[in-house]
Figure (cartoon, rainbow, N blue to C red):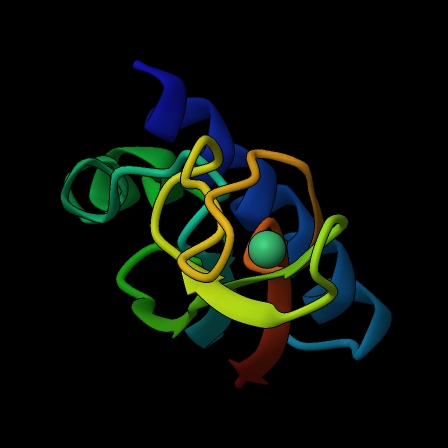
Length: 113
Ligand SMILES: [Zn+2]
């Protein structure tokens, strides 16, 4: 499962940060996930307890902030929101665009103890 390796990557970052802070446990992890990042949130939440087992983040809460997808059309220069990478411009139907946001996947904040 793709999301399990993502969850494990998040746990590795959280553990590294907790060690840097001299903390023994991670209580909460806040992440940002773009709608275009290709992450199934249900699967990520499902994988979370497995990924955190026997780590500093065992039992930690996972908070997800969803970032909507936005693009700028390369033909008509309008900005629009997109749900899928292959969505076309709602103004001129061009498929050519520059993605402004929505592909991010990052750890935003940690609560350690
Ligand atoms: Zn357009």
